[in-house]
Length: 441
Ligand code: GLA
Image (cartoon, rainbow, N blue to C red):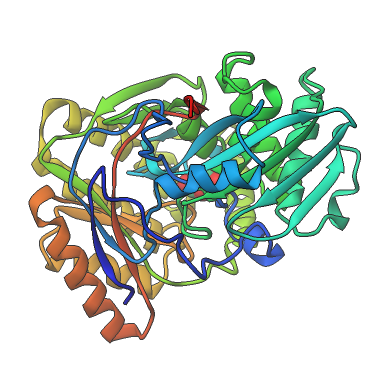
């Protein structure tokens, strides 16, 4: 188990997490999960107030240490100073409940988290886009019109850059050339949408840098298109919406048909603990596409636009559709419980969601199931896999003052049982993507 680290707002200046798998740079990894990718985190640098910095709260880290001041300074350094420099941040997300529902026009309840992608850039005159990644290494140089052949771009995270250029161009935003550097603290391949944070940061920057130039829903669609072009995985829109619409302290109830987004305040006394299984998700890309196709076939057979429209009695004998229909209801019930302060209702809803993803939708793994069991045995109110599944993370609702102990204990027991190296950390709900002020210095 990696070193455990208590984190507070002014204690985040830690070395960048090492050895994180390069999802953007690794084709298999890039396909693993539709929307996971590199990204940095909200930083507490005095000069760079992060839009919507999260409220102070205790946080637990086992592995994946966060980095604060050093990141922005490193980006400025990599860009040879502040002159004309602009910076955006785009957070990753954790999905509290509602998985494999977004592409069925259903409901989801994600939150933007205090792990993010920071992108620093300035215009270039020569219509070239040149990007360096501080975490993943390597440099990408492509044409600003997005005309490079996607399949030939190396390192592969560069395909997200070209995808973003094309997606923005298709929306009338032909950007100039730019010189850029990027750094991320969203653990790649974890189910926390590192790739969406990366793509959102780029569409924000190419689109003008404030997030106000284009409708944010359109920016989300552009980021999704960029990811689909880069990976070929037919992801839904949840991750990009969460990154763009995040609100400090809130989860977001998203209706994936209307794209209505309602903030749902998270309870003060509880914390969201994320535990990474340490499992690579090599099958997630193809299995995800398969699941999505299965859902579409069932909807067509039922003669409805999407499984969102199916009634419980219509899907009683079909496990995939049964998951989608029951999960939509659990999302609505969770949002209602949060609004009513009915904390006792939350755990059973999360556990039922996990069971449905495990048994009906079949996207869990024995390791994720074990983590859920260990967390609940250790005192979590509830826990479930989060994101596409097939590895990555589980999310648990825990008493805030118990999070530290539970993280350490769960990680230890999990490692003893599996030999895998887990990571655990508390996440906080932060505001969505936007510009970062550099300040004067
Ligand atoms: C991935 C996709 C999302 C969503 C989840 C599963 O994260 O990118 O669109 O489908 O899987 O809920």
